[in-house]
Image (cartoon, rainbow, N blue to C red):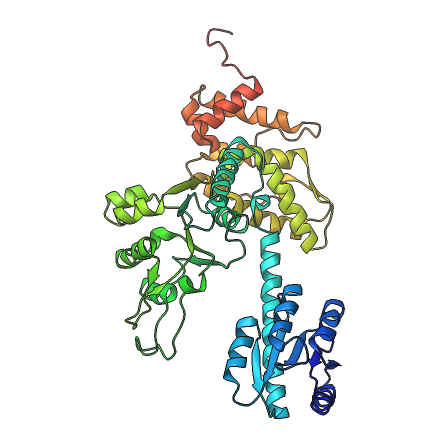
Length: 476
């Protein structure tokens, strides 16, 4: 589809030359002689580019730019000024022009500037598209689950967002997100950004464990040409790229002590210095970090700076592991089954009662990420619309590595659980599993919880929910 260009020029010969030249190069061109005539065309036709003279009868070219960009802030404008009229070019750029040309205009130069401005417009549209798509998949709606631990965490996120909205653009507090690997810490960070006050700014994510420690500084803070052996060009770091938005530092516990000092300076002063530079730059961004490490223990062991630890945890959000929110397992499983089913052309997939019991009974040491990835294979290989327990590739070795006995692993994965009863309901299967494990441990709550991969509180909650009571030892 040809780009549309509106030429606003009162010199008929010049306007005709521009029009003929651009039409021959496959542009859709409209022409008018005044700003007053141009405005209704811009409002009705929404051209991709406006090419306007500075001196027009009536309203000036600068006034046209201001009025036109008030209608469409994405509109691109090229201003044509008289030879040597530097002041006109400056005014045009201040008014919102993307570029300018001086008379007499060489047609080859016109083509170069038009191509450059339209390419910039395409890049902005692509970026805007990806930002909108990214925002649609983020936010609080991306945090799936209605269990008590998830409701508590989402309520805290809402409180933080509400407080930030009242801060009127001030520096937002630093947030530390804690949780096991695979729990969804990145989704929480995205919710804080895309539902927060800086949603229109960039969201820059960096995994601190993804590259060697000696390259981290250049990646974060950038470098000048010649700063080190391979620094052949100047490079902007991720901190500067996040200016006006959010920098998300995942696995922040992996940063070495030397770089921790520089991160602390960034948090305190909001300034950075590129490698090889003598000049400090001010940045305006909010920082969210995440870790699956015990930072308090690392502080005690001298592996993490105490001052940085307290600076990072102004607000701390803990993401619960999946084993502590097992009421959400089936909701998540159905969500991922539908998601993968759409991808692989297998709509309408559902889980059998026996499969649901397996999903609910497993401790998920890899958390939500393990569930999502396991179900991708399950969906890909599913022969029909009903997913049975034998199709769930549960990692029994990980169960044993997480402190779960082989006997409990066998129960969880459908061994002696009695799932051969086709009419068994999900609640019956869950009840049977809990009763079997409690019976094996003589109702030792701590030992049973370890076998099931649950916390003591979660097991007690299930015992109360299922109405279980310890049998009288003297009954025969």
